[in-house]
Each structure stands twice: as structure tokens, then as C-alpha cells.
Image (cartoon, rainbow, N blue to C red):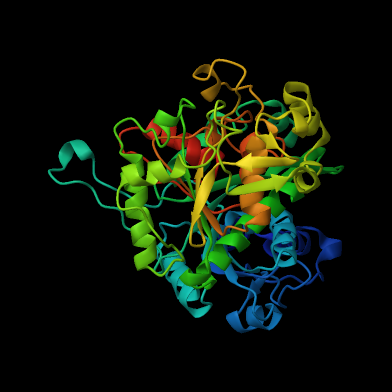
Length: 490
């Protein structure tokens, strides 16, 4: 081969992508197989460092799957919120985009307008210039990020005289949801109690957390696409897990609705932990005055226009008002009034939507809803009160018939019916737009299930669902705080 031929072959391979791969084979055939000398070929095409991606079946004539903003707009759904979907351009280079095509279809079917961008990285200036320009031009309400690592670089705390500061690479203050693309198989994820292997935890959970991203779920896994007979290899590509993808899509849409809705129209559930489950420990948080913090949050919400009324003057006053109705105290459950409850028939409508194995596990552990300790007159009682349209709830106990301290962190104890009813009522009946858990930690993030990348059979997922979740957490306990981030999208 001449130097020119070598350079051309190198450029085909260096640029990558299916179009260049095809043209490479055409060029080699025409150049070195005499009977193919008349075969037409095209010079290597430069793959942009960043571009709007156009899914298969919608590709432009240049074969690069690249679209203009006008072309994307022409296919966008009117009135649907826009979410930027970021992924590495290396997926284009390796023809690993089928999963993203499927994901885009799922996002659209759930009512979102995904604006897919193939980028070199979040540290690449050219890529970030395009991302930020389209973030503004499209009026995006959300970023769905599939790239790994952290984009923020901070100095070592040991070498700084001042606290380090975080700088977002994005021009808009919008939530950034981290979508996990597992490097393992779906079978491995299903069988592994921790969910993700250490490599994925490091690159797709821990480091993205440093950028303040909301950790969602694993929605794709490596799988054999097909067996290439000529090469005698199994071609491995990402495959979408549609159920997990729909969970993330619903969570994304909930964030967009939260952004678009006026504060005065937003219903929020503010939840206080109760550990152990004694009345004197409502809002317990070692080192944190949770009741006073809750009052501060409620006042800030009222100042911002949220529908909060009759806010107690102090944290003590808040607790006194909560003690005026049912709590987790089994001795007063049937003597105090209850301000909200859920009919068993209504509860069962949502309970029957759970995986059958999960339903049976609750029955095996706790029996029927009628046997639940918080059942009164055919209804499951829910602890808490409403201040205007804002619900202040006491998080239910995980169980009453065993050691109250031990059950708080028990990795295997299934939550009872009244626990599920508490979260089902907030989500489906009262219709909260977001949940705020206040305190050092509650028990939701300790329910049974995977350590990360939860499945639809993990109990934090079952209880909270695809709900925007905010968690003011004491700063000196990041270890337990990470549970809330990784297991309840906090």
C-alpha cells in the first residue's frame, strides 16, 4: 500500500461509523481486487465531535445519522416537554445505537420530546457549546445523561484554604438525571443482590454523584445482537430493558411537570422519620433538629408561593399537632382521630399491580390488609396532617411485632400493608408532585432490594415509584445519605 492508501484506510477506521466502515470495504475491494475495480466508493467522512442524532429510519442523506435543529423540531410533539438525551459519539462509531433508538421511542410514547445529542464528552468544549446552545434554544426542562465519570474538576481539599465550589457545566439550572448503561448482562443484574458490579458503580454512580446528578435506574444491558458467520464472533450490543426505561421516562416526565406547574398548584408530601417508632422519636435525626428544619422548609415554601397554610411557629408546635392524631404508637392507634386514610378496596387496586411474588411476600409476612394493625373500619389509617395543600406525614413503621430497633435496618423485612398504603395514597390518591423526606435518614431507603440499579421487585421502587424525591440530609453522614441517592432517586 502506498502512503496515501494507508492514510485513507486509517481515516476510515479513525472516523468510524457504519457509513465509513462500508466505504472502507468498497475502497479496499476496488483498490486490491481487480474484478471489483469499477466499484464506487467515497472518501472518509468526518464524524462531528458533537451533533444532533437522528434515529434509524429518520437518517439524513449523508448517512451520518445527523440532523439539524429544524429537522428535529419538525418531528417533535407539540406541547410536550423537551429533555436533552446525551450519549457518547463512540456509540455512533461502533454502530451501537439501536438501544438509543428504542429508548427514544419509549420517551416519546410517555409524552416527552427527547433531543438526542451524540457528544465526545462533557469535558469537551465543542460538545458543551452545542449542549448549552440547544439547552437554551429548545427550552429543555431536563437533561438525561448516559455518559460516565464526573465532569467537574475540583482542587484537593487538603491543598485548599477555602471550601471547594461546584460549577455546573450546563448553562441552565435543570435537573440532570443519570441513566445507567450496565456493562453486565441482564441475567447478571437480576441475580446479583448489589445490582451493579463495582466498575459500573464507580463510573456510572459514584463519579456522576460528584456532579449532583440524580441517579435513576439501569435501563440497558449488554446482550448478543447476532452471530457473525464470516467473522465467527458474537456481536455484543446494548439492549434496552423496556420496563426500567419506562420507569425512568415516567420519572423524567414528573420532573418536567414539576418545572412547568406553578408553585401554587403543586402538592408536596413532607415526611418525617420515626425511629424508633415511639412518639418521642418523631422527626428523630442525630445531630439535626428535624422538626425545626421542617418548619424552616415550610416557611420557605410558603414564601415561594406553595400552598402551605397554618404553619406551626416552632418545631415543638409541629410535633404537638402531629401527636393530635394517629401516629406509629400501637397503644393509641384506635383512640385518636385520623385525618387521612385509604379504603382497603382502593388500596387493593394498586396492590394487585405489584409483581405476584411481591404480593405473596406481603401476605406471607403480614396476612391480609384487614389484619394490619392500622386497619380501622375497613380503611388503612395514615399518620399525618395537611397544612393547606401540603401533606406532613409520619413515615410508617416497617413492623410492630418484632424488635423495633432491629427492624429499621433489616435488609429482608417486607413492609406491611399500611406502609405501602401510605405511599400509594400520596402518589395515587392525594396526587403529590414531589416528596421531601427530612431527617438523618428514614426507612424507605433501607427496604429490601438491590443496593443500586433497582428492579421493579425492589421495595423502595414499589413504595415510592417514579416520584421526584428531595432529601435535605445532615452533612456529616454521607454514607447513609448515599443510600437515599442510589436507592430512592434522592
